[in-house]
Length: 137
Image 1 (cartoon, rainbow, N blue to C red):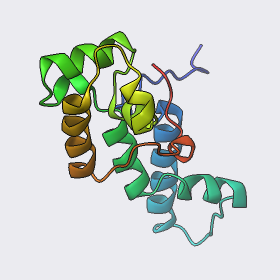
Image 2: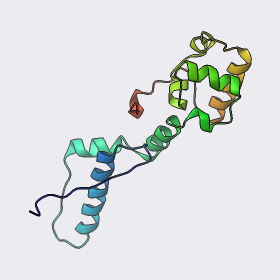
Image 3: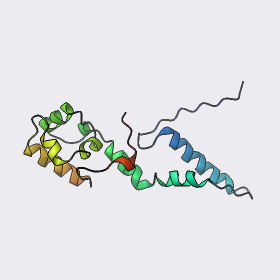
Image 4: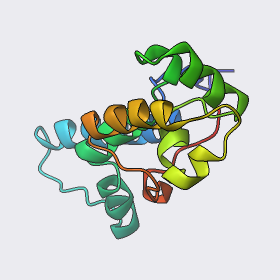
């Protein structure tokens, strides 16, 4: 029974495995077209879906999924964020500054530290993350 093919696809989390397979198939089709006289066209919605994963979006998704424990944060700031279940940069920037100040034991010093981190990464507090399609793991 050779009618079944199973792929195990592992990604870094910046793209869904199904999307990675779709992209790989499109690249493969493009390469095979170089040897063929026939032209294969993709449906319009497939092209639109592909465009949503441009390089900048992929980089941003990967950045937003960065774990805060991997950042160089003070123990106090990290503990406050852990207690509030803020685990990634994406979780952090989804809050505005006023929301952060409401966290238990979170003060101006921690806010200043996080503002510096967010600015250095090219992010802002209160960002709309919906266009990056972040999945909660």
